[in-house]
Length: 134
Image 1: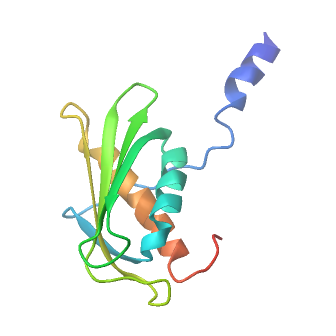
Image 2 (image 1 turned 135 degrees about the horizontal axis):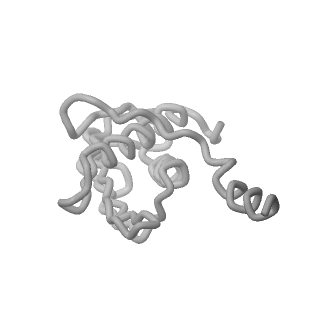
């Protein structure tokens, strides 16, 4: 019995606690490097217990470039998060303003998408201007 309890609790012990839901109007804007989107979404997906299903993008960071990730939870609830470059980015330019929005299937609470946006924004801010992930 003790072994079963240990095995049951072992899987979730290493997951960080997700951020609080972001408040205010959506979409939000954050200063970030366009090439950090993938790392920030992957980290946020892990923290919020989501899996990335699909990514589509246009552009490579120039103004109006877009990226959209489709995600799914273990309960098969689908979400998406999208990004739009509001100015042009190059590896030498440093952080630019990026718009972030997210959505869920109609039956999900708004809290889920606000937590996902908060997590991604937190990681983008931590990575901004760095050549390596902290």
